[in-house]
Image 1 (cartoon, rainbow, N blue to C red):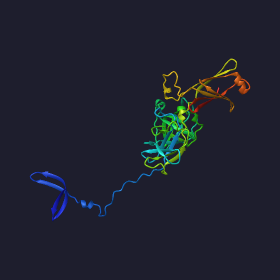
Image 2: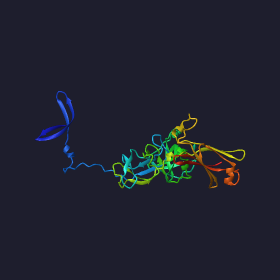
Image 3: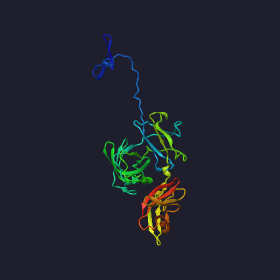
Image 4: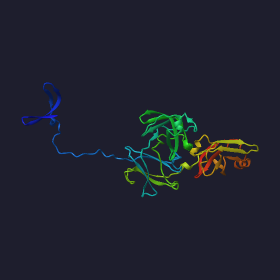
Amino acid sequence: MILLNHDNRLIEFALTSITDGAGRRVEARRSDRAIYDLAPGSDRGATSGAKAVYGPPLVALMNLPQLSEDFPDWQPYAAAHAAPWYGTAAVWRSASTDGFAVLTTFSRPGWFGTLAFPFYAGPTNRFDRGNELWVDMIAGQFASVSDAAVFSGMNWLAIETTPDLWEIVGFATASLQSPGRWRLTRLLRGLLGTEDAIANPAPAGARVVVLDGGVKALPIGSADYGAAWNWRIGALSKPAGDPANFAVSFAPSARGLRPWRPCHARRENLPGGDIALSWTRRTRAFAGDNWALTEVPLGEAAEGYEIDILNGAVVVRTVSGLTSPAFTYTAAMQVADFGAAVSGFLSLRIAQIGALSRGAILDITL
């Protein structure tokens, strides 16, 4: 850009070419930047973008079995989702209606959804190929994975089949059917001892939470479960009393301390009319997945069981204090309970005893 003085006026020219020869030839194009200037006016101050307005989050406080050895087995779990996301969400807790203190924070949102259709009961301990799980996701997406990946904890969901009772389900195959609606198949049901949460069916609209890094254990102490606390969940940048925070009363139940339901119950009719009952215990200890072990770890302070013997819907005998997975139901007991020896089917409830008394119950007829 050059300025040419012509008639005492400086005129701008933009050089377009310069050619050297016997003389120097210069070509230029006149330019007048003033015609592109803004019209005169007062200066305008800088403005920032619109400030984000945070609404109440979606929150799930869940009494789940222990999901990882990284956290104590008595702790519950929580997930929160908001759009826009807060950046960091906080969980406050108080035993009263004031004096809330931050218990933990979330750096990432959880993935939430609901059942699109009723979800019916299915087999456990093997793939459920008969049911399809249809989920309407509020946020998040899925991908199909190998069977081994599902066994390792990928693609696990918690489904609230009844209030505060969650079935954990894994899936290997995911396909998007419409925006936000997913069809999940090749299912593993009742994972981590949640067979007792399988409903028939779980209703459409039931809450679904993806069990990934957006779910966090609430770091309560070992003396804090069993009592209802007041909770607030919302943006860390706001105070606990902010009206946009989610407020709820929730009692951690230490679900992770409950022994799992026994399995492989057997009956043998003995000479003389006695009935030998036996079963196999399971363990909630993560070391129980080690196939090299001949016996899985106990996972409890001591081994113990209780049995209920039923006549229809009526419990006619409860047997407590068993220290091994076996019991002989003598002919004399049968006469006392039924008026005669039991020649037909026998209905039982079998449970392992843990720190919180009975664990999940095996309800079976042999």
